[in-house]
Length: 136
Image (cartoon, rainbow, N blue to C red):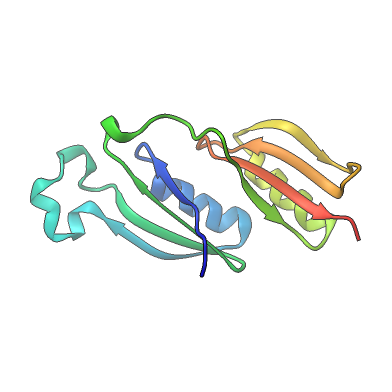
């Protein structure tokens, strides 16, 4: 069994997944637009060129997402964070810096009582992240 986060975007899914691919060394596996499906005739015009379903692989993790109709988008995600664990402090700091570009840092990355390096941020797309390098 595998648990994968599924993110909803307000028209920015393609840009967000391209950003995650570049910033985190991931690989986009799927990027399907609404207009490439049999349901295209039933899709509102402003969604036709947007993303119906996307998948990006980051390490052993898959993150999925899509652009949703405006009436189904409830704003920036709250109540959770995507947590990325790294083997070294340097890797954690690099990922943190890249994800923070254009975003908002809520806890700068640094050594804590429980981790060699830990930080929290919300990226430019409104997705919350926690970056961690555990103590040895």
